Length: 375
Image (cartoon, rainbow, N blue to C red):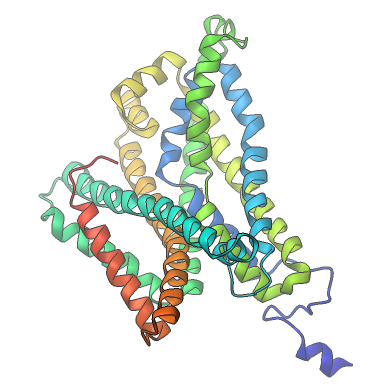
């Protein structure tokens, strides 16, 4: 009996028929990976959009943040879990349930969505690096072509080590990111002015046109601030391999719940600390200047360290989000290339397919990051 139990144990040392399924190191890696894919540099603009309309929109955003994020991503995870194959992700489910035509269509839409975001991140990381060199380091940056290709190659060199190493790198990047947001939130506590509770702001505690318009403008930012759908399919496939079909749903829900609670807790603490420090009128001023909340606070309190932190958070946030989106994009591209390889009998090995995907990604990101953009 003992031998059979050991033979059927999963890589975590948990027997597949063990209903406890405690918390393991790989669960922490995936929890932080989900966080890393979702929370990027956009969090620096969330306090401006969420607090600009006063207290009521901010309270509504607080109430909606967890259910909107958890229920939508949990639904996508459960959709992926329907697949009868351990190796198949979201495209496999679409093919099984709706046929090959639907699979091709969804593959095109899914790829276009993720890959376009990947290109935007390649532009953003180039812009952020050049800006840091010029404004913080006061040095002349190399040509945009050199900076972009070096950054993209460095990021894609990480993914060459495989999904497990990529997730561990993302998890490592999440720690300083979380610490930075929490430290900034704590640093601002002595500077809280509570201007949002002023009589002028409290007069807006009704669902009037202004409040509804603020919510209308804030909800897309809220959704994008916590969005991590590109990595959900690889995430579910990994849980199915580790825990089997019987416990995949339970384990996926456990990891997602903790990851999203971490996202919402850290980000909302940062948002509230920023909003309590400035007034809605000042948030409007920051929005009109089109700068992040940290850049605005650095100018207001004359603390250059804020500007450095804004650049650091943006750089780390963009890099980890780039890696997370690449994991999702790679899944789609590998699926399409594998299908094409089989139908056309091209004779490509899995390693060659990975190399072609890498070359395609580098080429597209290099061209995209060459654009003069402020994404």
